[in-house]
Length: 318
Image (tube, rainbow, N blue to C red):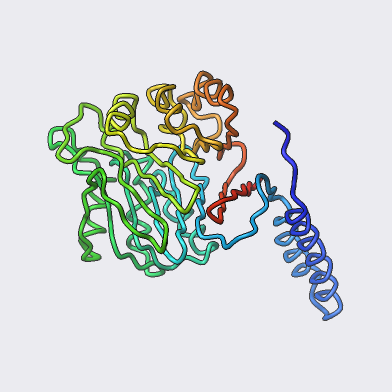
């Protein structure tokens, strides 16, 4: 599908270009060193790498979904009005990357930090974020996994230790529970309370965010088994934006589930040339047949969806 920029989006790019010229000229006239001037130019021209697609936003932007590029892992910042929800933090070593992004986004307080499930590519950087002196946190949400499959990894232990040292309590997800985030609804779809699954991925916390007429579904690494359970609970699963499960793996993203969601946009958090072959070709074909626009962190870098509750714009890094 061909993307076209709206007049408003073109004006934004023209404004950035003029800003580059004005600031660079001012720096040189003020006697700034050539090295400093070049540094400023590099940073400013970096802004021009961003492309804006989708609708022209006319109303107040109250829902933002930042899909942070953390390689083969997940990290999503949901900004709901004045409320901030961080879902997953990537693999071990990615905590600093997430912190840098939060700083860039002007976020110093998290109303919720959510670890969808205890695999390291989702919670590996979570302890770094929790321990950071630059971030304050109100609530933590993580699933209650069955004792027989609860990982005893160093990663999981470090996250629990960080939570304890910050005197935070873990909220367990309960399907059907709604949280009001400054006018945006966060609905828990899964996992089931006191459930015992054979696969750790199936404990993934699945959420639906809704602001007026626009909705987003995020779901960690939930499998087809969980998708069917969610469908059976008769939720309204229609959503404009869908965070593809398990980095585009074939164990999730069933046709029945996608039909229920019927997304306009799908976003895949995935590492470049990863050893798993994610995203799988059959999943991409499935989405393509639904005329769903697909964005991927391995191809587009950081990805931001913005909405006023009616329109959606998409900002990609590369």
